[in-house]
Amino acid sequence: MPQSGLEGIIVGEPIVDLVQVEAAKWREALWCAPPPVFDALGFAHGPLQTLEKGEAPLLVVHGAGERGLSLFARVRACLERAGRRSVSVPLALPAPLSALEVDAVINEILLERMPECPEEWPGQGWDGPLYGLGDPEDCSALA
Image (cartoon, rainbow, N blue to C red; front, side, top):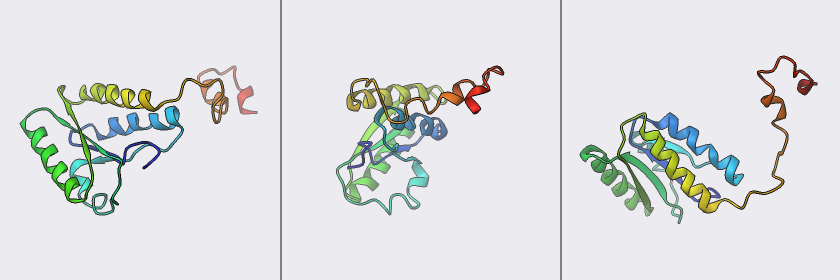
């Protein structure tokens, strides 16, 4: 099983880029690579064919209307043929507001898997020079 707990996130709405940003939370919260994010139709051209049998599900983000449910049914049928599980995430809001719903779902997944807030973590403090970016007086971080 991938460390992220998901094989990937398939997006059937015009918010793929926003979901990509959300997926990056895996690195910060679980210290592992995020699951890849695919456009639903693009998924059929390469990623689907390279899936191996496994236990990790694929999250399928789609609209809650008739078109979105139809797309989910088609994606699920493809994944079932590949021997893979899918988890449906129907979105009630239109894009780009639906990205907020995805944010809530991903936060819930991460909170379930996340260890308690540690006092130390990998790379702690390494990002310090970036936090002074807007402060012209803080050039010492660059030395």
